[in-house]
Length: 349
View 1 (cartoon, one colour):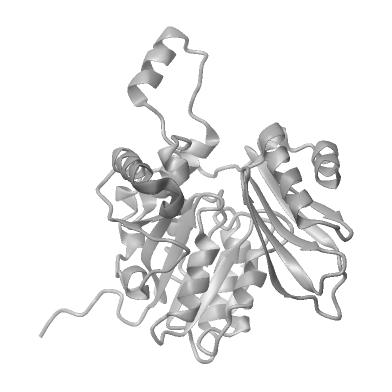
View 2: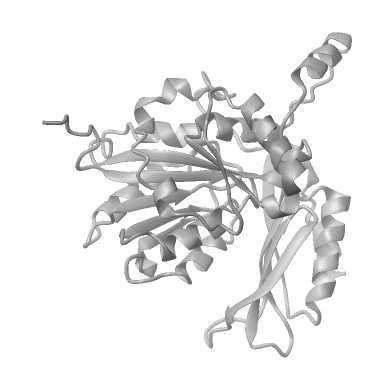
């Protein structure tokens, strides 16, 4: 008789990581609707005080993944708040009736996956769940442009010439840590990168990842669930093979990044808002803007998603009778670039 799987009886958990705007929420929305009969539960970790992604995913709920199976952890990095947030959330999901067949965790774009992976060794949960796999999403267009990788030889030469120069940005370290922890890399937005961009992105990932890792291309989050769910990686038992820039540190900080919530009334023209966000990204190095806008005279809420100067807007659902018709946008940037007065003036025009 074949040996039993060491994860038999444990609820599998898939960690979905990736930089801001790489397409994590789009992917999970697709998984919810195409889970192959699995009962899913979703944990969404937001960076900022205003939760957006959880609300989007609750709007995708179906009988096998009802709204109560979608839990949002806002205003705190999940890998920094294990005891306070992550462990109680997992225990809550495991107590659901019926119990989920599979849990999917969407980390914030700024989270480091390895500290979260280590949390699966906590006594309260280690015998009940297992990390089925760590999925890292990478924006093909951004990677091809060289935003999250460095030329090591050139960097060493520059450092040798001037030891005071440091070209390792916080964003690069986040990207590298996500790749290092991954069992599978999903290369998103290939339609924007083109064939040459995809090839360049693949080459960058191969050069950056500490070990060979499969890379799969996808567009708009569409992928067969069997490619992502059911990897049986037991990643919590393989932590040593997943190096991090923060190995050896007792804890890590996210002081390199900050966020604020911009709130205003109704807007007249979505195109004007898009132009303002584009200008803000260029002038203040804003990494991410996401949220909702109330458009005067429109019964639908306008969903806003921006990665740098790339802005997408769409009407997602009608405003509810108990909701205030206001515009709320989360703005994420490196710490020294967050200036409430500058950002508020830019978005208000």
